[in-house]
Length: 90
Image (cartoon, rainbow, N blue to C red; front, side, top):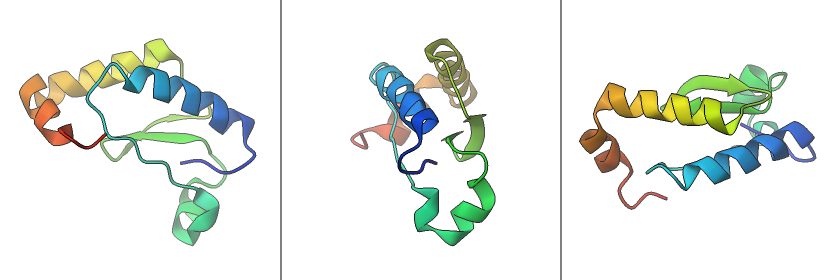
């Protein structure tokens, strides 16, 4: 979850994009200011990074923290199932 002209959002996006190259993931960016429900839910917390639909980080994330979280998700679902979820969805 992001918004325009947000330096924290830009910083998080750089980390996410770099780490995403290492994992079979599907990235989706949503601007909270374009959706009233998202603005009400996340408007004061942006940027917010959801992993598998759950809030994983807000404001900042390091590459190391994100890698740890994505590896934990891989273990949770099993690597084969994880890859199947995201095949062709980059």
